[in-house]
Image (cartoon, rainbow, N blue to C red; front, side):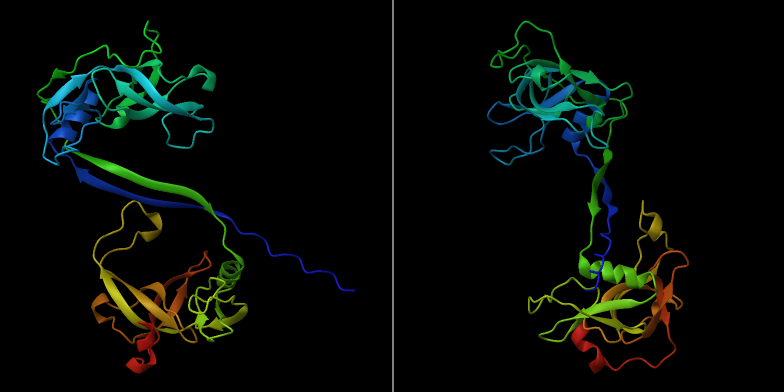
Length: 330
């Protein structure tokens, strides 16, 4: 009897997908965010007389531009809610809180934000709340730190607002005209059997793909199944290390907020078909002026000193590959 082989270690790693971008603001959004900085909540009146908070720049019924700004109260009524017992990083509060939709007095729509409450038993639909302003305000939705219970006499009476919306010219000194929108997703990634083997081989400076038992194509990186035939791939094949540039682009915009892409522009990013592979992978081309990179260029990996992956690919000095040898991989 032979001992059963130990299952491979399950790999896990935290990953962050992040795309911060800068956007300009129109007159309505500019007034809304600047107003928050000044402790004023503004809405906009639509063609049918309703007040929308947060304001939009176009009427949801007629699609016409609207700029009739009004000031609403910093108090309101919870219309619905959900308890968040495990706050995530970057959320409004570090302790458990409720996500609430609040219809501010004078408004006809509700705004989504956090409610600081001791527990779910302390939150009810219809409860009165008020804005808790941030200590330092910059002209962003986070200028509302959260909502907090308002010990007013009208709890449970959400139908009658306490405040009539008053016209506002939307003019403030030093108006906010643009914002940086932080689009970010944090998650834990666990590769499957095929990619675990691929990553393990990279740590040994080898590139390993998998062959489809039906069409016999070799896929790099492997995904555990043939995308054409839909059958499992288990036959591992070492490819490369050299390969051929099948197509490429010249990058002229420097990546921002990305430490591992701190590369001077312009540079070339290419599809590279490694010898023996039937699928091209991505890689940066170095060791050659960007304007001399071409389709058919033969390249080889330059491995990082500490990480188990190619930092970039450089020319091998071989003659260029014939177009017919890689045309199916473009």
